[in-house]
Image (cartoon, rainbow, N blue to C red; front, side, top):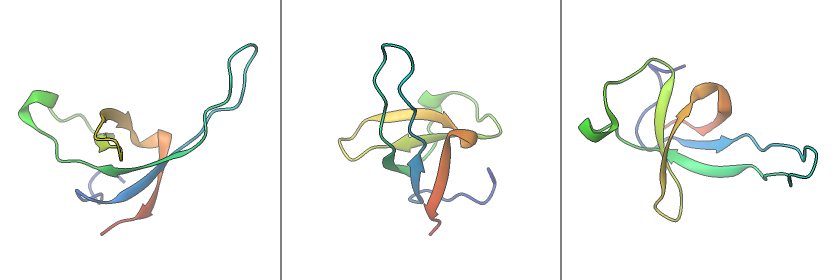
Length: 70
């Protein structure tokens, strides 16, 4: 999947269930962002995702599903 994802593709990060005393985390929608030099060398299966509030995170493709691959 790592080669076919384009910048701007919409994804949904998997939520996590409540475990012990920790609350659950709801699924969240984000977009694939462009990999920059500040992100370091490109690693297979890893993507930079951008959230609606502008935050960015490096996430492995096993932690999300593709909603729209433009």
